[in-house]
Length: 236
Image (cartoon, rainbow, N blue to C red):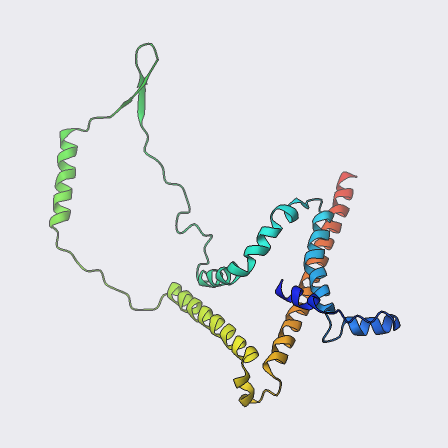
């Protein structure tokens, strides 16, 4: 939103009096706001078009504004969270692959069938004594420290890879921010100023965003067309 406001706050230098060639050169120029228009059309425009094509546009009016407001605050948090769970290759059940059987209770109804009464089965005294004896023996048994296997397991290797991945991703983003926004890196051989590098970075980012949105839109159109064709053949 900041880029949009900054791009259109001043005079828009689109040359409309020099024909199509002049207009395209001014529109796609390096200092023009045309890239902002392309990025907006490739994101918001294509999202709305795809939503109407699938006949389900209501979320664009109810959920999309809220998504835009909080997107900048949680996108990095979600990325870090996703990288932090890289070592978990399970289905997310955390070991609970099946439901445990719950204990059953026996109920009986009183005369007339008005109220249900839960019956507790009385255990024989011999069973109670044996369970108590087993508990006492377990409590008096000296504790034997389990042997720790110092060999690195497969899960440990997954966690180590996860840690290195998260650290490299965070530090690479910090290094990229320093290289783009700091004038001190000119000593490393960068000839352009920080303002020029920042502008070029955002220009490349907007072009990449537009290209990825276009690819997703093409995939959505292909899936919709394929589904429609298959539906027609299925009906016949």
